[in-house]
Image 1: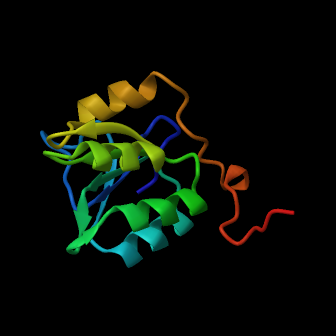
Image 2: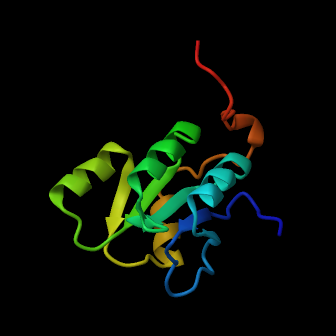
Length: 132
């Protein structure tokens, strides 16, 4: 499917966009390997995760994704986070914590307030680049 520049692309990890995703293009994955592969190969505007992925805490995955795509926005869908877990999530760059799955309309409204990341792959940092 070809997407235009206005399409918001979401990588949903072990959670769903509620009320239909007509407002956004959602790629669903349910494993750490699939997430890492997707963020290396495709451009997304938002990473949407639950607090666990395949029985593991999301924190190590969030760290890895931040290394590959440091500007990727990240929302966490989790109920009953402790204060320590919320601090950890914020430290790892989460921009919104939700208790239930967001709608496509909410995602579009929130991400449309700021510029959507460029789809131009020339603007994407290389996951293999090293800093000097």
